[in-house]
Length: 448
Image (tube, rainbow, N blue to C red; front, side, top):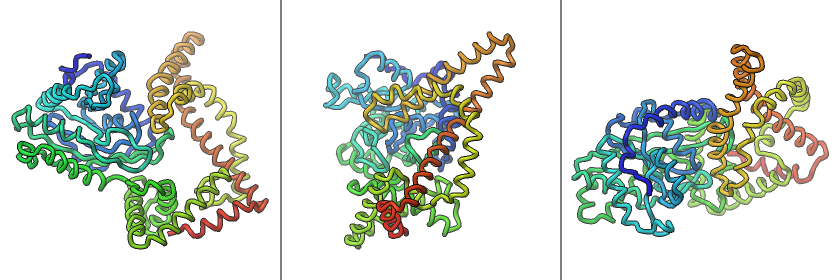
């Protein structure tokens, strides 16, 4: 097993690479990152323990890592089974990730090893470290939460115990909300709740540790849930997800609020999901009918290969013709963007196909493209241009053009898909497709 004793030590190589990670994550991969409650982040050198929901693989710890404006190096706590291979374990150690062990973690089934990890965590916290943990113990495939496991309270209380209950540990609830889990240039909301001290639970922990674990877990999940879009009805998850997406725009416009602002959307979505949950309790028959209509509507869209947005905002033929003409005229520029960026952009697809868990796809997109493919490709392009032209300014111009065309290439790709869908809709409507007519009728029933 690799040495984890000095994981809290300031790492110069880590610090050297951190600005690049933050730039590619905050400015390139995501179009916009909103931080709500930044003032709630404890100072750098105070012991703090961040607890948040987990939905998007590696992108979740990256979101927390890139949250901080100072150069702190937070320590993450993850499942022990991912440390099975020495090479991976060394990488995880460099990334400042500590393991916690469970009985089902194969060769690491001796959970007594956790005592040693807790001591390391306690030592790090006494040095003013920031710890981060995902109490659900695995990411969820959508906007919902699982129960919190006992690992987080064990680490927190053990850290205080090893510090003779003088640590003053602050628990910081947080929440991550993605507009789309998989799209490049997406948006993300990070909400940081008010920290609260572990101290009120310490006396109970000394006499009834399990009860203290439960109470701390209940308090944390209550605080995280209050900030998180949490669809509890898993049977109708897809239907509720569709309804909140089509309802929030209409409702926000009626309130004279910006429907494109993701934090505003999130607050409206929380209200919509709460109302649907209440409807399920108070009017179960009406709720069941709404879900049945929504499921039929969604099934029809899948069969037609259409999306909800095109039903809500059907294309105007004259505008569609003009847009299509503009796309044809801009095709040479998009082709240049593909030539410059197509290979590194699609590089992640080679590895993504090997991953069955869809919620890890964005992690592979980011890691393979932003960390590996694009840096190597741009360096090679720069060097080749410099050698062939014998002018530094030509190489710099090539890189600048390639970088600018990356965003144009992606925007063109997205617009092309939307225009194709719009033409498909127009053709189906002109043909008076029976299924489309049924979908349009169902759509009228699904407005708030």
